[in-house]
Image 1 (cartoon, rainbow, N blue to C red):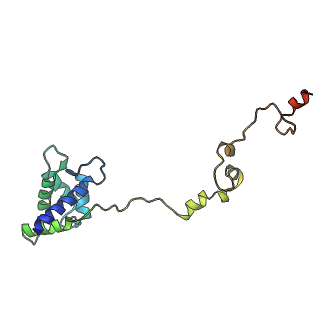
Image 2: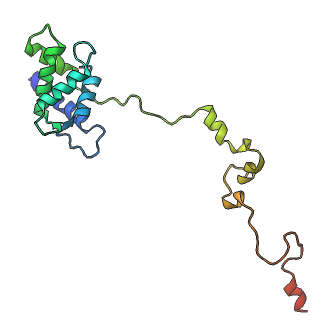
Image 3: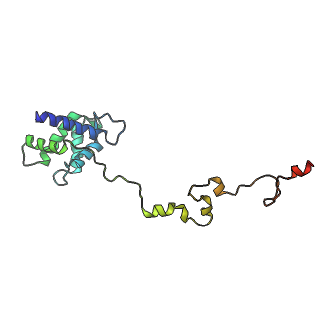
Length: 176
C-alpha cells in the first residue's frame, strides 16, 4: 500500500518537472533538460558516482530511437538505471527504493531567478526632485512628467511677437 502511494507521488513529481518551463507541456512527457533538472534538484546527481553526463546518457538509452522526450514509464526505467550507479552497495530493489525517495514529493526549484533591483542607485537616479538644469523643467512638483511641454518649447502661431502684451485685442479695437 505504501508503494502504491509512492508511485503516485513519483508520477506527480514527474508531472511537475515535465511541465516546468514549458507552457505547452501536458505533463505526460519530459524533455532531457527537465530530466537533468529533476536529477539535479532531487540530488540524484552527486558529482561523484552520478554526474550530469551519466544522466544524459541514461536519458538517451531510455528514450525511443527518434524521440526527444520520455514518458512516465521510461522515466521509471531511467531511475532504475541510475539507482544502481547512485547506490552501489545496495541491491537493485533497495537502490530503486532509495532513489525514488529522493524524487518523491519534490518540485522544481526556481533558484537564481533575477529579481528587480531596488538599490539606492536606482532610487537616486529616478528621484525627480534631485534633477537639475533642463531636466528639472520636464517634471512638475509632484514628479509627474509634463510630456511634450516639458521637452520642447511649444510655439503659438498667433501672428504676434512672443512677448506682446496686447495679443488678441485687435478685434476689439477695430469694431469701434
